Length: 287
Image (cartoon, rainbow, N blue to C red; front, side, top):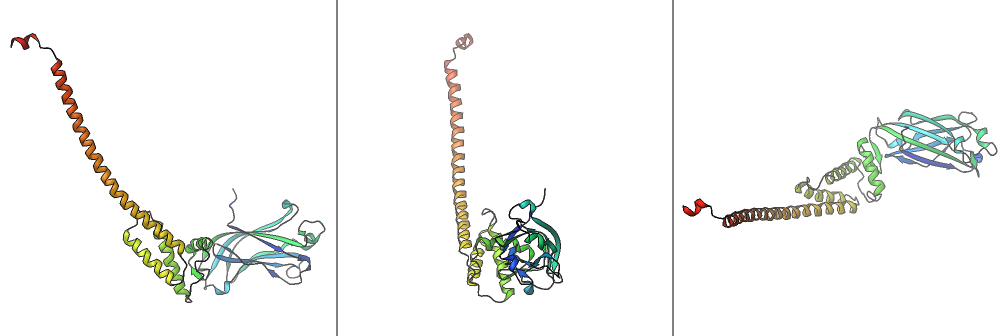
């Protein structure tokens, strides 16, 4: 079965045939914390009569030295009348300082695009889709102004997707401090992912202190504060439940012992009743 791509981005180029620019760039889009954009040459690259399309890493100027991205990607020029006639090409490459973009110089003939009723141009618009599967990340990645290890990117990206306001008021400028606070936040989340039963009370107390430090730095963590409160309540309920369980177990043990005593008394009464009903034998009479 074909492996699915991580993310799909659609770019609609208006008035394609009228464009005079040598090249145009799409909006920036993000895949697992990495910024990308498409670079199109609507009149062809280096004089060729083909649409040229390249996938490029965006914002690489701010990346630390040594960064690399390994990606599999598919670029599709969509035929808007019949998808089966769409033109698609795939690539798999390492993107790095010396190779910030990869793609296809001869993606699709301009004559074919501009042909009457070709289906590639509808109301003057050309539709391009790119699908990306990010295979490996080397070096730190910037996500919302935080330089992260590759192992942190997915978690932080998911957090910002769910709570985009989290870092909107962070006043820290030092990138190392920003990274440190983000690492603290991720550590706090990992702590809360434990079962409340296994979470030591000291760790929960420290979670409150860590939350206070993070909010002092400008992070908006109302959602995390609610979760910490929820975990604290669960911990208290567990403690109360344990106490009630012990009381019930003791009461049950006492009841079982009482039942055992009653059963023994009952058996004794039955035995005496049977003895009282038994007739005397001849030997019993003459003894």
